[in-house]
Length: 407
Image (cartoon, rainbow, N blue to C red):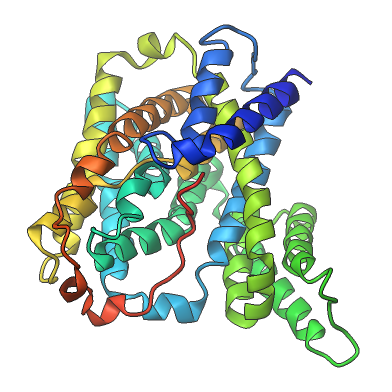
């Protein structure tokens, strides 16, 4: 009840200040995270949250499912094919390289074993430009750069997911049962593709059809059915969610359009609740638990892995040096990293608290650094129209962002 009260009060405050937040370095997401830190056991103790509380695992599960479902719905196969070139380099080369470089830092700086270090790398590899909205939404910034960051952030949560699943299985010693892990992934993928395809095909028959009033609930019903079947069959819920979103976007553009506003609001509420709980779990002891090496890692994780990875990924591309520097710096760690950390914490592996603390330190630093430098970097670019920079074939058709900049 205390959690509900705190969430309701902060949500009212967030709504009231959201217009102001859009014009500043702050964001509603940052408000909930900071409120959790202040109200949690690391602050005034008004909102004590136990990592072992089933609520933490359930909230993380629902929030991640909802966000992956809505992210997947913005990434139909046709969209992905059109948005291939620059975003494709960042996603297919930059993301794995960022994961590996981050893992190397976690292994040698913090002393984590390789499976756990790679897990930390996977958790911290997705980006979230909500904390860099002044850059992503600034029309003075070259269109292809904004397009690149939008597409990348809309898809990399889901692309990082298999790495997190497999590495978490290894860290929890479930890798000794690879058939079990593989079965969960296959079942989740089958449910995520099969259920939306079947429902949308049925809806297209003459005897069926959603009324205008119920049309926004079509994709919601699909999502709930995928979630329920995933639970019953022990399929991987998160892979099912992302696959279901992509399938709806591919075979049901009408359902995708009807769902967009309503679905994103539901996902946003779950996201903000997860951020509040995440902040409440950050304690004063984090300074002692991760030590100097942990904070050094947090800084290194923000300034080295992504720039190195994208420098390699963009070799031979036509991005200017200024654009590459901006793209390299603006890889803010946001909601995906938060909720993956909550999933790991609730999984109860031996190093779960260490992983959570390292991710928490990195996310907090990222919010402070990225949200306070986006306006500065945006001013780098000339105020003149950037039409010449938008001529690349890969930038002509762009994928809608999974981040609206208002969160």
